[in-house]
Image 1 (tube, rainbow, N blue to C red):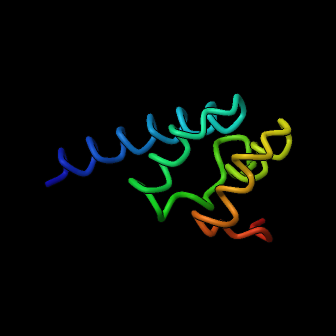
Image 2: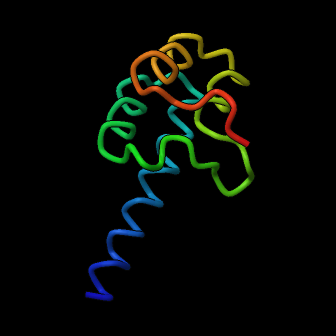
Length: 79
C-alpha cells in the first residue's frame, strides 16, 4: 500500500510539473489532460506558489486561461 501511494504521488508530481510547463507555453491539450486526470490538483499551487491559472495568465495564454475558468472550473480567487 505504501509503495502504491509513493508511486501515485510521484506520477502526480510529474504530471503537475508537465501541466505547469504546458500552461506557461500554451499546450492546451496537456493542460486539459491534467485537469481531467487530476481534478483535485487543478487549484493547487506549484512548488513556487502560483496556480495553473495564474501561470497561464502570467504568460498570456488566453486560450488556456479560458479553458481553466470555463471548462475546468478553476477557482479564480485561490490563494
